[in-house]
Image (tube, rainbow, N blue to C red):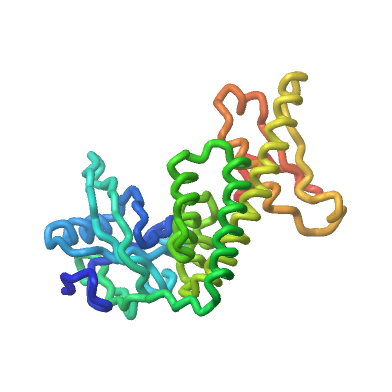
Length: 287
């Protein structure tokens, strides 16, 4: 068992994440319910060793093997464990470094993984180019922060004060509510410049969703004020017309808005989605 977290390879207790991605230097809180995961955490705490966290491709898989996991995860240090009455645990971990598992197996009690550290590739671009990249991503994040409105001030200040391209990208990717597979894609980028380009794309999409969400909020208030009990949303843009594929980003934005409503508001705004020729209650829609 590897004890020195600064070494570049070794075997560690492992835990498969569902819907979450761990990043280096980031504090991650997670709820752990699977017995093997709880035992892996207990082992890490008892032996004072780090634990390897890697994300599942499909959150529905209950007993994952290596084929169900992404190839890259993060070695983490367990900072705090709070045991729950149901046998699960609420855990606080901090990422140490990116790692790729060479194998991921069940030792009978819990999962273990043999890993190797993944180092960032050196940036060979000119310093002035790197500075321009940092400005670009900060400007895009500022636009997103204004649109998101409820972003904690400490996150905004941390982005403003961070000039390290690689760490800045990790911090932003970790803190924006992007899908976990998008965050995983950021984790897998060892070229900091490529990582920045990916994060820029994510920020642009999240900004667009925020703008859609604001429009939905405005329209919903007007409809509610006029006594309507339902909203029918067409899942295509005006440019798409009657194309067979709905605009799923728009539909997901509606769902996100609906999930944020109070119980009283939900009783008024039972949003209905029209998909092609089908009428489906939005809350029952699998998206």
